[in-house]
Amino acid sequence: MSLSSSMNASVAGLSSNATQLASISDNIANSSTYGYKRVETDFEAMVIGNSPSTYTAGGVSTTNIRLIDDRGPLIGTENATDLAVDGRGMLPVTSMNEVDGGNPNPPLMLTTTGSFYPNAEGYLTTSSGLVLMGWPADDNGTIPSYPRDTTAGLEPIQIASSQLYGSPTTEVGIGVNLPATSTTAGSTTGPEVMTVEYFDNLGKSETLTITYTPTVPASGSSNSWTMVITDSASGGAVIGEYDLVFDASRADGGTLATVTDVTGGPYDPATGTMQVNVAGGPMDINIGTPGQADGMTQLSEGYIPYRSERNGASVGILTSVEVDANGYVYAVYDTGETRMMYQVPIVDVPNPNGLEARSGQTFAVTQASGGFFLWDAGDGPTGAVEAYAREESTVDVAAELTQMIQTQRAYSSNAKVIQTVDEMLQETTNLKR
Image (tube, helix red, strand yellow):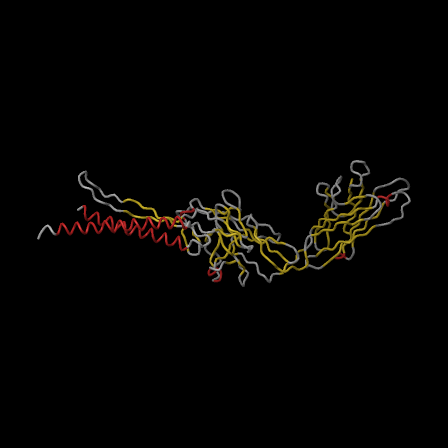
Protein backbone atom coordinates (compact mmCIF):
# COMPACT_ATOMS: atom_id res chain seq x y z
CA MET A 1 0.00 0.00 0.00
CA SER A 2 1.30 3.44 -0.92
CA LEU A 3 0.52 4.82 2.55
CA SER A 4 2.87 2.28 4.14
CA SER A 5 5.61 3.07 1.65
CA SER A 6 5.14 6.77 2.41
CA MET A 7 5.71 6.12 6.09
CA ASN A 8 8.73 3.90 5.43
CA ALA A 9 10.23 6.52 3.13
CA SER A 10 9.79 9.22 5.76
CA VAL A 11 11.35 6.98 8.42
CA ALA A 12 14.34 6.62 6.08
CA GLY A 13 14.28 10.39 5.71
CA LEU A 14 14.44 10.84 9.47
CA SER A 15 17.38 8.45 9.69
CA SER A 16 19.21 10.11 6.80
CA ASN A 17 18.78 13.61 8.18
CA ALA A 18 19.89 12.40 11.60
CA THR A 19 23.03 11.09 9.90
CA GLN A 20 23.58 14.44 8.25
CA LEU A 21 23.11 16.22 11.56
CA ALA A 22 25.75 13.93 13.07
CA SER A 23 28.27 14.92 10.38
CA ILE A 24 27.40 18.60 10.83
CA SER A 25 27.87 18.35 14.59
CA ASP A 26 31.24 16.65 14.07
CA ASN A 27 32.32 19.39 11.66
CA ILE A 28 31.26 22.21 13.99
CA ALA A 29 32.91 20.53 16.98
CA ASN A 30 36.19 20.34 15.03
CA SER A 31 36.04 23.79 13.46
CA SER A 32 39.13 24.78 15.50
CA THR A 33 40.96 21.46 15.16
CA TYR A 34 44.21 21.79 13.19
CA GLY A 35 44.25 19.57 10.12
CA TYR A 36 40.62 18.47 10.44
CA LYS A 37 38.92 17.53 7.15
CA ARG A 38 35.18 18.14 7.03
CA VAL A 39 32.68 15.34 6.41
CA GLU A 40 29.99 15.73 3.78
CA THR A 41 26.78 13.68 3.73
CA ASP A 42 25.32 12.86 0.33
CA PHE A 43 21.71 11.75 -0.14
CA GLU A 44 20.77 9.08 -2.66
CA ALA A 45 17.23 8.26 -3.78
CA MET A 46 16.08 4.67 -3.46
CA VAL A 47 13.73 3.59 -6.27
CA ILE A 48 11.39 0.61 -5.96
CA GLY A 49 9.83 -0.82 -9.08
CA ASN A 50 6.60 0.97 -9.88
CA SER A 51 3.70 0.22 -12.20
CA PRO A 52 2.21 3.04 -14.30
CA SER A 53 -0.85 3.17 -12.07
CA THR A 54 0.75 2.77 -8.64
CA TYR A 55 3.72 4.60 -7.14
CA THR A 56 5.66 3.14 -4.23
CA ALA A 57 7.95 5.42 -2.27
CA GLY A 58 11.48 4.02 -2.05
CA GLY A 59 12.94 6.48 0.43
CA VAL A 60 16.48 7.78 0.75
CA SER A 61 19.90 6.59 1.87
CA THR A 62 23.07 8.45 2.76
CA THR A 63 26.78 8.10 2.20
CA ASN A 64 29.40 10.03 4.11
CA ILE A 65 32.66 11.20 2.55
CA ARG A 66 35.52 12.96 4.27
CA LEU A 67 36.94 15.58 1.92
CA ILE A 68 40.59 14.86 2.62
CA ASP A 69 41.83 16.62 -0.50
CA ASP A 70 40.42 19.94 0.78
CA ARG A 71 43.12 22.22 2.17
CA GLY A 72 42.67 24.56 5.08
CA PRO A 73 44.52 27.89 5.33
CA LEU A 74 48.03 27.88 6.82
CA ILE A 75 48.76 30.04 9.85
CA GLY A 76 52.17 30.97 11.24
CA THR A 77 53.46 29.77 14.62
CA GLU A 78 56.59 30.24 16.72
CA ASN A 79 57.71 26.60 16.80
CA ALA A 80 60.28 25.60 14.18
CA THR A 81 58.89 22.06 14.04
CA ASP A 82 55.26 23.02 13.55
CA LEU A 83 54.88 21.58 10.06
CA ALA A 84 52.28 21.68 7.30
CA VAL A 85 52.20 20.74 3.63
CA ASP A 86 51.63 23.70 1.34
CA GLY A 87 49.73 21.84 -1.36
CA ARG A 88 49.08 18.22 -2.22
CA GLY A 89 50.52 15.38 -0.17
CA MET A 90 50.94 14.42 3.47
CA LEU A 91 53.59 13.96 6.13
CA PRO A 92 54.53 10.40 7.16
CA VAL A 93 53.96 9.66 10.85
CA THR A 94 53.53 6.65 13.07
CA SER A 95 52.40 5.89 16.60
CA MET A 96 54.74 6.46 19.53
CA ASN A 97 53.26 3.33 21.12
CA GLU A 98 54.60 1.29 18.20
CA VAL A 99 58.05 2.85 18.59
CA ASP A 100 58.10 2.31 22.35
CA GLY A 101 56.99 -1.27 21.77
CA GLY A 102 60.10 -1.90 19.68
CA ASN A 103 58.30 -2.47 16.40
CA PRO A 104 61.06 -2.31 13.74
CA ASN A 105 58.49 -1.57 11.03
CA PRO A 106 55.87 0.69 12.62
CA PRO A 107 52.72 1.20 10.50
CA LEU A 108 52.62 4.23 8.24
CA MET A 109 50.03 6.89 8.97
CA LEU A 110 49.56 10.20 7.18
CA THR A 111 48.75 13.72 8.33
CA THR A 112 48.75 17.11 6.67
CA THR A 113 50.00 19.04 9.69
CA GLY A 114 51.45 18.54 13.14
CA SER A 115 53.07 20.32 16.04
CA PHE A 116 56.18 18.27 16.75
CA TYR A 117 58.44 18.59 19.80
CA PRO A 118 61.36 16.41 20.93
CA ASN A 119 60.28 14.09 23.74
CA ALA A 120 62.56 12.77 26.49
CA GLU A 121 64.20 10.37 24.03
CA GLY A 122 64.60 12.96 21.28
CA TYR A 123 61.78 11.71 19.04
CA LEU A 124 59.84 14.46 17.25
CA THR A 125 56.33 13.79 18.54
CA THR A 126 52.95 15.50 18.85
CA SER A 127 50.92 15.74 22.05
CA SER A 128 48.65 13.00 20.68
CA GLY A 129 51.57 10.57 20.33
CA LEU A 130 52.43 10.80 16.63
CA VAL A 131 56.08 10.50 15.61
CA LEU A 132 57.41 12.17 12.46
CA MET A 133 59.10 9.77 10.01
CA GLY A 134 61.98 10.42 7.63
CA TRP A 135 64.95 8.98 5.76
CA PRO A 136 68.20 9.18 7.79
CA ALA A 137 71.26 10.91 6.32
CA ASP A 138 74.58 9.12 6.14
CA ASP A 139 77.76 10.19 7.94
CA ASN A 140 78.54 12.66 5.15
CA GLY A 141 75.25 14.47 5.63
CA THR A 142 73.68 13.24 2.38
CA ILE A 143 70.49 11.24 1.87
CA PRO A 144 71.09 7.83 0.24
CA SER A 145 68.75 6.52 -2.42
CA TYR A 146 65.73 4.89 -0.80
CA PRO A 147 62.75 3.07 -2.40
CA ARG A 148 59.78 5.34 -3.08
CA ASP A 149 56.90 2.87 -3.00
CA THR A 150 57.60 1.26 0.35
CA THR A 151 58.32 2.36 3.90
CA ALA A 152 61.70 0.59 3.85
CA GLY A 153 64.25 3.14 5.02
CA LEU A 154 61.76 5.39 6.84
CA GLU A 155 62.60 5.82 10.51
CA PRO A 156 61.08 7.71 13.44
CA ILE A 157 63.05 10.98 13.57
CA GLN A 158 65.18 11.09 16.71
CA ILE A 159 67.55 13.92 17.57
CA ALA A 160 68.69 13.76 21.20
CA SER A 161 69.13 17.11 22.94
CA SER A 162 72.19 15.76 24.78
CA GLN A 163 73.91 14.90 21.50
CA LEU A 164 77.38 16.39 21.03
CA TYR A 165 78.82 16.88 17.58
CA GLY A 166 82.39 17.44 16.46
CA SER A 167 82.89 18.44 12.85
CA PRO A 168 86.39 18.10 11.33
CA THR A 169 87.60 20.86 9.05
CA THR A 170 87.67 19.82 5.41
CA GLU A 171 87.66 23.23 3.69
CA VAL A 172 89.70 26.38 4.26
CA GLY A 173 89.46 29.66 2.37
CA ILE A 174 92.08 32.41 2.64
CA GLY A 175 92.36 35.94 1.34
CA VAL A 176 95.75 37.65 1.44
CA ASN A 177 97.29 40.66 -0.24
CA LEU A 178 101.04 40.29 -0.70
CA PRO A 179 103.18 43.43 -1.14
CA ALA A 180 104.23 43.92 -4.77
CA THR A 181 107.32 45.80 -3.61
CA SER A 182 108.71 42.61 -2.03
CA THR A 183 109.33 41.03 -5.47
CA THR A 184 111.30 43.94 -6.91
CA ALA A 185 115.09 43.98 -7.23
CA GLY A 186 116.87 44.95 -4.01
CA SER A 187 113.94 44.14 -1.70
CA THR A 188 114.82 42.85 1.76
CA THR A 189 111.31 42.48 3.10
CA GLY A 190 111.54 38.71 3.51
CA PRO A 191 108.83 36.08 4.02
CA GLU A 192 105.31 36.77 5.25
CA VAL A 193 103.63 34.29 7.60
CA MET A 194 99.99 33.57 8.45
CA THR A 195 98.34 30.88 10.58
CA VAL A 196 94.96 29.25 10.11
CA GLU A 197 93.21 27.29 12.85
CA TYR A 198 91.37 24.09 11.95
CA PHE A 199 89.78 21.19 13.83
CA ASP A 200 90.91 17.59 13.51
CA ASN A 201 88.73 14.49 13.49
CA LEU A 202 88.44 14.55 17.30
CA GLY A 203 87.54 18.23 17.50
CA LYS A 204 91.02 19.31 18.65
CA SER A 205 92.40 22.64 17.49
CA GLU A 206 95.33 22.41 15.06
CA THR A 207 97.16 24.99 12.97
CA LEU A 208 98.20 25.43 9.36
CA THR A 209 101.20 27.73 9.01
CA ILE A 210 101.49 29.32 5.57
CA THR A 211 104.74 31.04 4.62
CA TYR A 212 104.94 33.32 1.57
CA THR A 213 108.52 33.86 0.36
CA PRO A 214 109.08 36.45 -2.39
CA THR A 215 111.34 35.79 -5.36
CA VAL A 216 113.69 38.77 -5.56
CA PRO A 217 115.22 39.18 -9.05
CA ALA A 218 118.53 40.84 -9.96
CA SER A 219 116.56 43.50 -11.79
CA GLY A 220 112.97 44.49 -12.38
CA SER A 221 110.10 42.63 -10.68
CA SER A 222 109.43 38.90 -10.59
CA ASN A 223 105.86 39.07 -9.22
CA SER A 224 106.52 35.56 -7.94
CA TRP A 225 106.17 33.95 -4.52
CA THR A 226 106.66 30.53 -3.00
CA MET A 227 103.85 29.38 -0.69
CA VAL A 228 104.76 26.65 1.82
CA ILE A 229 102.08 25.04 4.04
CA THR A 230 102.97 23.14 7.23
CA ASP A 231 100.67 21.22 9.57
CA SER A 232 100.99 21.26 13.37
CA ALA A 233 99.20 17.90 13.63
CA SER A 234 101.89 16.39 11.39
CA GLY A 235 104.71 17.67 13.59
CA GLY A 236 105.24 20.79 11.46
CA ALA A 237 105.84 18.78 8.26
CA VAL A 238 105.41 20.46 4.89
CA ILE A 239 102.16 19.28 3.32
CA GLY A 240 102.18 21.56 0.28
CA GLU A 241 104.48 23.90 -1.67
CA TYR A 242 103.31 26.09 -4.57
CA ASP A 243 104.83 28.70 -6.85
CA LEU A 244 102.55 31.72 -7.30
CA VAL A 245 102.89 34.17 -10.19
CA PHE A 246 100.81 37.36 -10.25
CA ASP A 247 99.57 39.26 -13.30
CA ALA A 248 101.25 42.59 -14.05
CA SER A 249 98.97 43.64 -16.92
CA ARG A 250 96.79 46.73 -16.82
CA ALA A 251 93.58 44.71 -17.11
CA ASP A 252 94.22 42.11 -14.37
CA GLY A 253 97.14 43.59 -12.48
CA GLY A 254 97.63 42.13 -9.01
CA THR A 255 95.53 39.00 -9.51
CA LEU A 256 96.79 35.45 -9.70
CA ALA A 257 98.18 34.45 -13.07
CA THR A 258 99.45 30.91 -12.47
CA VAL A 259 99.85 28.46 -9.60
CA THR A 260 102.29 25.58 -9.95
CA ASP A 261 102.41 22.74 -7.45
CA VAL A 262 105.83 21.62 -6.23
CA THR A 263 104.47 19.23 -3.60
CA GLY A 264 100.90 18.65 -2.48
CA GLY A 265 97.74 18.26 -4.54
CA PRO A 266 97.40 20.09 -7.88
CA TYR A 267 95.77 23.51 -8.05
CA ASP A 268 92.43 23.68 -9.90
CA PRO A 269 92.11 27.08 -11.62
CA ALA A 270 88.38 26.54 -12.18
CA THR A 271 87.65 26.45 -8.44
CA GLY A 272 90.76 28.17 -7.07
CA THR A 273 91.38 25.17 -4.80
CA MET A 274 94.19 22.79 -4.05
CA GLN A 275 93.91 19.69 -1.86
CA VAL A 276 96.51 18.88 0.78
CA ASN A 277 96.70 16.06 3.29
CA VAL A 278 96.74 17.04 6.96
CA ALA A 279 97.23 14.39 9.63
CA GLY A 280 93.52 13.58 9.71
CA GLY A 281 92.88 13.37 5.97
CA PRO A 282 92.45 15.54 2.87
CA MET A 283 91.64 19.24 3.11
CA ASP A 284 90.71 21.72 0.37
CA ILE A 285 92.36 25.14 0.50
CA ASN A 286 90.83 27.89 -1.64
CA ILE A 287 93.20 30.75 -2.58
CA GLY A 288 91.09 32.28 -5.38
CA THR A 289 90.89 31.94 -9.15
CA PRO A 290 93.22 33.43 -11.78
CA GLY A 291 92.24 36.89 -13.00
CA GLN A 292 89.89 37.47 -10.04
CA ALA A 293 90.53 39.41 -6.82
CA ASP A 294 88.69 36.76 -4.76
CA GLY A 295 91.59 35.32 -2.80
CA MET A 296 95.30 35.95 -3.32
CA THR A 297 96.41 39.35 -4.67
CA GLN A 298 99.70 41.24 -4.98
CA LEU A 299 99.25 45.00 -4.73
CA SER A 300 101.09 48.00 -3.35
CA GLU A 301 103.31 47.74 -0.27
CA GLY A 302 101.17 46.16 2.40
CA TYR A 303 100.90 42.59 3.63
CA ILE A 304 97.20 42.21 4.51
CA PRO A 305 95.73 38.83 5.52
CA TYR A 306 92.10 39.93 5.27
CA ARG A 307 90.19 36.63 5.21
CA SER A 308 90.50 33.23 6.85
CA GLU A 309 87.50 30.88 6.66
CA ARG A 310 87.03 27.24 7.49
CA ASN A 311 84.26 24.77 8.14
CA GLY A 312 84.14 22.38 11.06
CA ALA A 313 83.88 22.92 14.79
CA SER A 314 85.30 21.53 18.02
CA VAL A 315 82.36 20.31 20.12
CA GLY A 316 78.84 21.54 19.50
CA ILE A 317 75.79 21.22 21.74
CA LEU A 318 72.40 20.87 20.07
CA THR A 319 70.38 24.07 20.35
CA SER A 320 67.49 23.58 17.91
CA VAL A 321 66.02 21.56 15.07
CA GLU A 322 65.06 23.18 11.77
CA VAL A 323 63.11 21.84 8.78
CA ASP A 324 63.38 23.48 5.35
CA ALA A 325 60.93 23.59 2.44
CA ASN A 326 62.48 20.47 0.89
CA GLY A 327 61.81 18.46 4.03
CA TYR A 328 65.43 18.31 5.16
CA VAL A 329 65.79 18.17 8.94
CA TYR A 330 68.84 19.93 10.37
CA ALA A 331 70.37 19.84 13.83
CA VAL A 332 71.69 23.29 14.79
CA TYR A 333 74.58 23.51 17.28
CA ASP A 334 75.85 26.33 19.47
CA THR A 335 79.03 26.48 17.41
CA GLY A 336 77.00 27.72 14.45
CA GLU A 337 77.31 24.40 12.63
CA THR A 338 74.27 22.75 11.06
CA ARG A 339 74.09 19.06 10.24
CA MET A 340 71.56 17.36 7.99
CA MET A 341 69.97 14.51 9.90
CA TYR A 342 66.88 13.37 7.95
CA GLN A 343 64.71 14.05 4.95
CA VAL A 344 60.93 14.03 5.39
CA PRO A 345 59.31 12.82 2.15
CA ILE A 346 55.83 13.85 1.06
CA VAL A 347 53.39 10.96 0.71
CA ASP A 348 50.88 11.07 -2.14
CA VAL A 349 48.13 8.67 -3.22
CA PRO A 350 45.98 8.71 -6.39
CA ASN A 351 42.71 9.19 -4.46
CA PRO A 352 43.20 11.07 -1.16
CA ASN A 353 39.47 10.89 -0.39
CA GLY A 354 39.77 7.10 -0.36
CA LEU A 355 42.08 7.18 2.66
CA GLU A 356 40.76 5.76 5.91
CA ALA A 357 40.32 8.43 8.59
CA ARG A 358 41.85 7.70 11.98
CA SER A 359 41.86 9.62 15.25
CA GLY A 360 44.17 12.58 15.63
CA GLN A 361 43.76 13.87 12.06
CA THR A 362 45.64 10.89 10.65
CA PHE A 363 44.84 8.70 7.69
CA ALA A 364 45.72 5.22 6.48
CA VAL A 365 46.24 3.93 2.95
CA THR A 366 43.44 1.70 1.63
CA GLN A 367 42.60 -0.09 -1.58
CA ALA A 368 40.25 2.78 -2.46
CA SER A 369 43.01 5.38 -2.07
CA GLY A 370 45.50 3.48 -4.20
CA GLY A 371 49.13 2.80 -3.41
CA PHE A 372 51.35 5.53 -2.01
CA PHE A 373 54.48 7.13 -3.45
CA LEU A 374 57.14 9.04 -1.53
CA TRP A 375 58.11 12.32 -3.23
CA ASP A 376 60.75 14.87 -2.42
CA ALA A 377 58.87 17.85 -1.03
CA GLY A 378 57.92 20.27 -3.80
CA ASP A 379 58.59 17.75 -6.59
CA GLY A 380 55.99 16.26 -8.89
CA PRO A 381 52.43 17.03 -7.76
CA THR A 382 53.32 17.58 -4.11
CA GLY A 383 53.68 20.76 -2.12
CA ALA A 384 56.58 22.05 -0.06
CA VAL A 385 57.00 21.62 3.68
CA GLU A 386 56.14 24.75 5.63
CA ALA A 387 57.87 25.09 9.00
CA TYR A 388 56.56 27.46 11.66
CA ALA A 389 53.07 26.72 10.27
CA ARG A 390 49.89 24.74 10.97
CA GLU A 391 46.97 23.94 8.69
CA GLU A 392 43.60 25.03 10.03
CA SER A 393 40.35 23.08 9.82
CA THR A 394 38.53 23.05 6.48
CA VAL A 395 35.20 23.67 8.23
CA ASP A 396 33.20 26.81 7.36
CA VAL A 397 31.05 27.29 10.47
CA ALA A 398 28.57 29.62 8.72
CA ALA A 399 27.98 27.06 5.97
CA GLU A 400 27.55 24.27 8.55
CA LEU A 401 25.00 26.28 10.54
CA THR A 402 23.05 27.00 7.37
CA GLN A 403 23.11 23.32 6.51
CA MET A 404 21.95 22.49 10.03
CA ILE A 405 18.86 24.71 9.58
CA GLN A 406 18.04 22.97 6.31
CA THR A 407 18.54 19.56 7.94
CA GLN A 408 16.26 20.50 10.83
CA ARG A 409 13.53 21.58 8.40
CA ALA A 410 13.88 18.40 6.38
CA TYR A 411 13.73 16.28 9.54
CA SER A 412 10.59 18.10 10.69
CA SER A 413 9.01 17.64 7.26
CA ASN A 414 9.63 13.90 7.32
CA ALA A 415 8.13 13.73 10.81
CA LYS A 416 5.11 15.63 9.50
CA VAL A 417 4.67 13.09 6.70
CA ILE A 418 4.66 10.26 9.26
CA GLN A 419 2.08 12.14 11.32
CA THR A 420 -0.07 12.68 8.21
CA VAL A 421 0.12 9.00 7.22
CA ASP A 422 -0.83 8.05 10.75
CA GLU A 423 -3.89 10.30 10.55
CA MET A 424 -4.87 8.87 7.16
CA LEU A 425 -4.55 5.32 8.47
CA GLN A 426 -6.73 6.32 11.38
CA GLU A 427 -9.35 7.58 8.92
CA THR A 428 -9.17 4.24 7.14
CA THR A 429 -9.70 2.44 10.44
CA ASN A 430 -12.72 4.65 11.18
CA LEU A 431 -14.50 3.46 8.02
CA LYS A 432 -15.80 0.52 10.04
CA ARG A 433 -17.76 1.70 13.05
